[in-house]
Amino acid sequence: MPLWSGIVLFLVSALLMILGITLFNLGVDISLIPIGEHVGASLVKSRNLLLIVSIAFIIGVFITVAEPDLIILAGQIRGVPDSIIIGVVSIGVGLALTAAFLRILFQVPLSYLLIGCYLLAYILSGFTGYEFLSIAWESGAVTTGPILVPFVMAFGLGLASIRGDKTSEEDSFGLVALTLIGPIIAVLILGLFFNPSSGSVVDLPELDSFSDIISLYRFNMAQYFAQIALALFPILFLFAIFQLWKLHLKTKTLLKIGVGTIYTYLGLVLFLGSANLGFMPAGYLLGGILMKNTSPLALILVGLAIGYLVVAAEPAVFVLKRQVEEVTEGVISGRAMGIGLSVGVAISVGLAMLRVVTGLSLLYFIIPGYLIALLLTFFIRPLFTSIAFDSGAVASGPLAATFMLPLAIGASEAGGGNIYSDAFGIVALVAMTPVITLSLFGLVHAIKSRIAEREAVIPAEDTIIDLDDASEQDSV
Image (cartoon, rainbow, N blue to C red; front, side, top):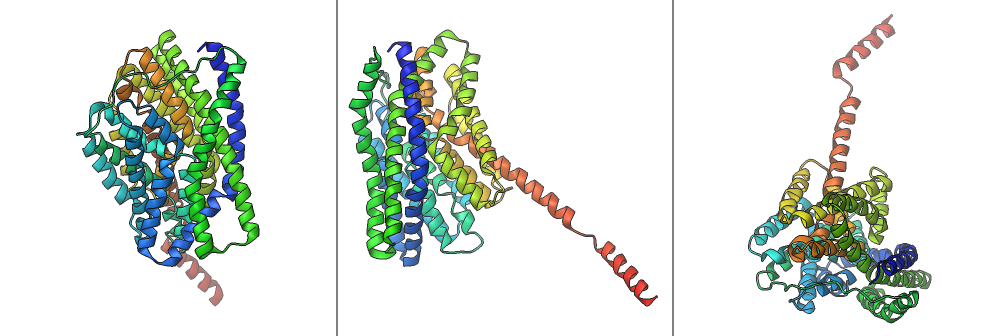
């Protein structure tokens, strides 16, 4: 594909992506979030533990099966059937979501579950094939896409709100964090039995004119209409069942949710279609050009810049920032959180480019990174722990899978590296560094709170002196 056509394709895709993000943000507020909250609250009111566990598992599996990012990842792995990867990841998400809801119901600290899960993942990483290792850590990050994240977060809010105690806000976050580590463990186990085969994993379209770009969209957008419809269907079907069985919402509310669903649907089709058709080839070409024509330092610096800018376009990031600002009552502002996420993702992509250049193992970054994040959980409020680990999953959205991963693959192939061990893992790093960044936000908040508490305390002796002075004046 000529360079000029790649640039034009990227610009056209960027315009369609802006329109898609606008429609998605408009629709998710009046469709996916209310549906999740209503269904979650209704489940708790039923007080049927078996029903809650079963619905949680079914939701996790069926949403993940149709998650577009996962389909993209599975198609980029040669030598392992797509259906096996998708099936294993879906089961991992289903089990993780079940564990997340049980944690809320029985008020188990999120940090305990995270520490246990990541320790298990570290142990399994020692036995999984070297080339499959990065794929496994990548799988969890790409699973938490634009459909799963808003619905699961709203589901958790509805589930936790019924309890109404002081920990309900803390418990409403953390579900997405567990749906990230669940697939990682599942695919690490799969890696004991499979190894990927070599070969290029990105197919570039032949585009010689602007009409070819139009034809590319015309012939390929139909599959995204079908994929998104399939992805949204389980949520809508579940909502319909609960509406007839438990909810009985008014017609006006249903119409509002219906309109929001249409906006969400069209927004996701435009966003994911433009990301896959335009951003994936552009990322691959850019990676190859940078590797061939610039120094390794330039590749790393470009990675830093791209990482800082790309996260601002992730649809699920908008949802998370708004919900965090509401729940924390402004303690964490959306703007501050956005900057923290951007800095974290910039560092992630810079480290990923360093791996492409040097061939360093992903474990050299993943193990110390998550150990730091897990240690910080002992010094910050549980709410900050939940938000921090959710933020990592949210930051690793469609753009990470469709632009930054091809960027790393293109650079790795141009440099003669092993794409599975050197390029794969970039999305996993994108999911890790925001966790550390926002945990540090929580640490700063904890320190400031303790200082404020100390300054607010009035010494006892001062109070006694004031009282004595007052009594002497009264006697006079």
